[in-house]
Length: 440
Image (cartoon, rainbow, N blue to C red):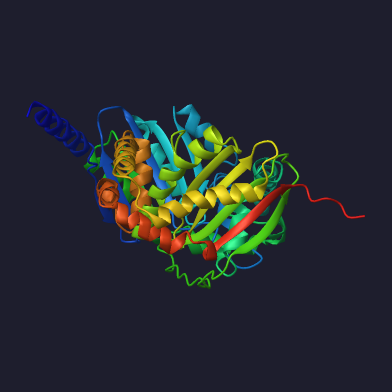
């Protein structure tokens, strides 16, 4: 009885902790279509202002790839009221930090300031939306910046092209077939008119969400938002109609070459559903089961026990329209790639063919509970989550209830989803090899 009481008390404590993590927020729309989300947390004198635009690498036409990532840089160039090159100086001189990032589906800009500089953060983002200076000098400057980033992060970095190779082989029609950063020849070929048109199409209030999180007064913040963002004209509605992929009905084998590596890699990849689908959550759990930590199935078997791989992993690349599921390994010594494929498939097959243990299932649930508690621990992370759940998932309340999806996933469902997506006849196997040998 005492043990049951202790367990009951522990579960109650967990429940109270999770309840205490609930994120309270208020959301509304301006007349120009800009969605606004406010989260008040007066525990520390900090505030995050952020804008997420529903535009990413997939939003392009053939021959004009990489525009969204290019704009991530270009929209720091300057505005009608901010001198070229002064953006970061303004932020740092007022005690703030800022950054931006782009995925295949969205672009995110944010600043973190002492809360007495909230007005400055709102002004900066309204300037970016309303008054960006887009001219030939800025385009040429940022073309060189993006080229250097591509060289450092992709072209000259070991395994830097691996994800791009997976995308190229899993997708033949959808824009996910091309890398988020794009191809340099496309940026070089872009005219100033192309760039201006792209800005007018996507960087408009009705294609964005503004999140303000932290030490704020709600009434004052709403007034400032109306003053700065209310006058910005609404853009045309963005219409997307990307082609659907044909199903993969038989295994595909291919090779890719990377001159920056000495060890090859074996990659098994599968096309999976977009991250809004319930099955995508199940796939996240499967990847955690297979490769999260030294006690995971793949690591324990192939690295610790059989000493076949120096590194092994499985992860679900979440995207809006389709996901990509990867299982990969780097060999040890004389281990060949076929052995790696066989051993990885054996572990995936176990998930398809039998229920994981109740102990492993509970361990998974505990990990996701812990991730949920940690994800809402600071206003910077909360701001990003609120923006993403609204803009990409269409449900802001997921910031509080997404954990319920993971809690409801059963062992039977894990087996069912593995059988649905992680089958040998639906996979693309890539031998990722050192530089291709020169022919005579």
